[in-house]
Amino acid sequence: MIRRYFPVFLFMILIIPTLCIGQERNPEQAWVDSVFNSLSVDERIAQLMIVRANEPGKDYYSYVDKYIRDYNIGGVCFFRNHPHHQAATTNDWQSQAKTPLLISIDAEWGLGMRLDSTTVFPFQMTLGAIRDNGLIYQMGAVIAEECKRIGVQMNFAPVIDITSNPGNPVIGMRSFGQDREKVMLKGMAYM
Image (cartoon, rainbow, N blue to C red; front, top):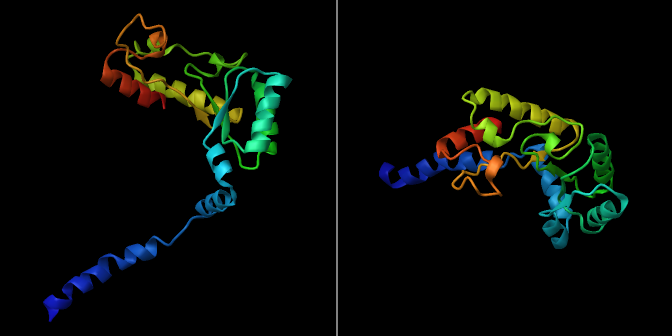
């Protein structure tokens, strides 16, 4: 008789508690679900879009305003501006957005790559020559703090390309080097 009911007993002990624990939900997940469920199919698709915001100016930004208001896009990626103007623009766009925007930037060697009057760090090629990856970690932490101060939540950096052709104009200075492991370790330190 014990052998007959043992599988059922084992199932109850192992599976049922897991199902009960799986029912717990955190408040953030409940908020995400409520926002997601309030969106139309078109808005859900638009949430996957990040619009390039690279030409500060009324005409160009009016297009971004329209995408935010009319389509409920997911975010913007800044490519050129002044830090104070970008922070003000970010605040303005966040106030217009039905769903909070993901604010991003492509700043491989710091905000100075895209924003005037900000810190510029060395190119990845230079960082590839540094033996102490702790310095690269510290640089990444400074870049992250600077991004946070101006409302940027995601930096599309570092580029983890491997230099296979030193003459490649696309990769060039953007790579930590040609050694896969070294590039990986330096990229992880940056992040």
